[in-house]
Image 1: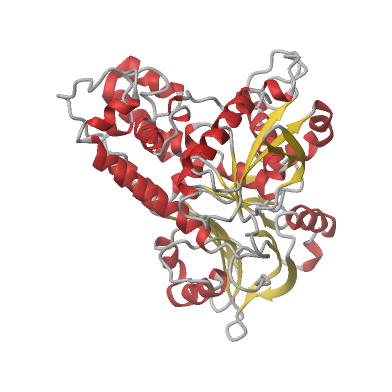
Image 2 (image 1 turned 180 degrees about the vertical axis):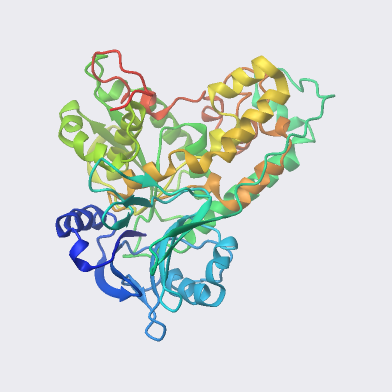
Length: 512
């Protein structure tokens, strides 16, 4: 992972050294392992490039920006290539540089993984920059006296998040920017078997497994999701023996606990898995951290994981956040959100920032000890709700228009995943020198779910806790997660109790 910062101007006199220093400070928290910067002349432009590296691939830390000594081309790469390029245990940035020089931007139509990049093509005097088509990595832009491109902003005003379905190119002679459209997310299948009747009594997920048509679909979903998880943890280097490499932001809900249950089938048995469960003191509600709904379901989920794999060193970390810590860090978190700036952004951002920081108590039986998380890669369940019908608006769509309206709503949600909040979440989590990875948004999982008929993924004729995300719930149930498989969705800001911490009438969509 990397923090990227780039300034482009007609002369070095237009550079704002104070701004560059702020960007350096902000991006250095994303990549503490290596930092380098350089200033070069290209055509009519003077360009300053900086990169900050979090070492997560290869045997050695690859310093960035990556410079090709023969051509003078330069690459700032913040991403992971999981498919489409044979990387093995090598550094993907070095291999990608060679592929870009051979294929130009066409290479980005076939690689799979989260990324943001800036590439200087010296021969053609062009600066290319973009994010992956799902928008899983942040890349911001600001235009004024100079063009500024960065992973995280240094101020509030003027920043825009680059559209994920486009690749941008600046001509370094004319300073004009052209935009190139790219292929987006596959359309969601609207196929429905209208002869469907309710299969079973809705009191038990277990009854579904007795019906032959369900098992092949569950098996295929398990295969795709497990493959995505395995790919996302395989290349993480060990920094020491028996090191904790992977953690989860863990509420105990069906999304994250299913990832954990599959992850434990992949990692070596002796390798610990960290489960970060965040909860807040809420003065408006007069509640303590232990009262938060996610704390209760998190502990319940941890116990279920211990039952299905008792030999695994599960590390359940209670991240308790007293209100004084919220006050201390809220301005910093608000800056990380930019250009996102709603009350809901702040509520979610606080939960993600404190959880990914990983400062808490390690729970072991009836006692707990102070603990700081060690994993640098965090697996998150984002993308499950959009694809599997997890939001309350999906049930509302069903109530108002049946299968047709529900299918349209799901397709709309999937198509706009890239325009929602993944860039925000990347800025917040990466500030703690952690990298978020999203198995439900792996290309193979998205393709499988997009092609799967709607009625296998959800069936709103069944009540909450069964009908939404039905396919995922059946997989969880089959994995032995009987309690977690029927938990209804609860948004993180309500589960961790970050919503409405102060008295007032502010709503989630209100601006900060």
